[in-house]
Image 1 (tube, rainbow, N blue to C red):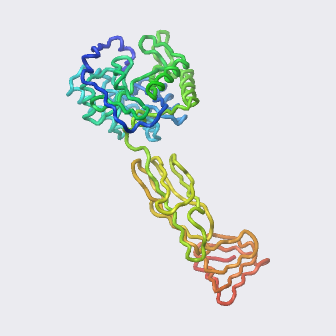
Image 2 (spheres, rainbow, N blue to C red; image 1 turned 45 degrees about the vertical axis):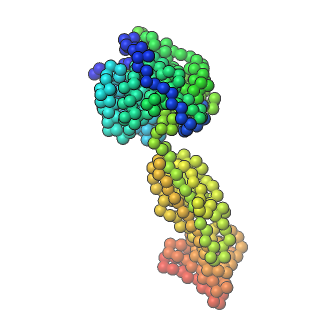
Image 3 (cartoon, one colour; image 1 turned 30 degrees about the vertical axis):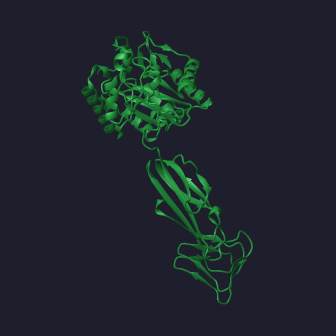
Length: 449
């Protein structure tokens, strides 16, 4: 099987003069979406079947284990049979950690094709991406970093709005590079965002490739963040493979290189930078979170005195923006949650029934909104922790309970014990007293022991 190893072909690239391909590019500043950002995007390129599978999986596992994000540039006609790679990519994507981007169909130089040819390649790539992972990518990393105006027009026609090339090949002019500091939101004249590579762990301009010290990698990231608000750090599978005597990559992992990757990740964290993706930084991707609104109602029609804020709402979900907060009447409190199962419950005073609406649990889908209403109604029994339990109004025993001392039902009240609930009273020490006009109603399946 022929392996695609782009590093070895760079010396044969044909570079077109910059002025001949960029004649229609202009700056299109838009005052809009970009948030202040000191960000790093890891761009892991040339993802494919049966080539450096072990080193690549070790890199992907590093990002999964560290719960950090990475953008994967995938050669789409060179993937689909290696279950190890496919499943690992799917694992990280399902966790929301792997951004999947297009990297050509056969790792072709796009500038070697006319508009129709480029569009066909991009459509084939997008269809393969959809078939493997159900994704329509919004980002394109051009093979050999080569692109032209036809490429940019094809991208816009197919709703692919982000291109990440350079610095080898065609590096976009400074005036169209995206700046991740508001109010800047720069695109080219086609409406595409340009976020080129700014640093890498190895110099791939020569062979054998030369290792770049971690301090220099971070210095390049610092400089890019100072200028653009972000850095794009490029990774190759060969960076993490053991090499033979000639510098050729082997199918085994160099653990020292994995350690260096971890060191860079930790250095990024130590500086307070955020590891992100192309879609997140440009805010062009589909929503990554759902909205969950929690409304708290309290009904006090049997002498209850508690209010919504006396109850604490508890959210169980993936990365909720808040997982507990005081209850609030309509319009309630809205939090964001990521995709996956979620549920809402509460803690608070006893003596109230609890009813949860249908959307208090379920599976969150990004972009959707859910409304959970929790209603509490007084009238349930509150068993004291110590001393006699004196019941002066109707109440229903909600859960299995132990009476701490005597139980006295008075004031024409009814103590109801429903199905499946037990009141444990030590009759050797304490008494159950039901005064005139009051009663104890033990429903079928309820017990007093």
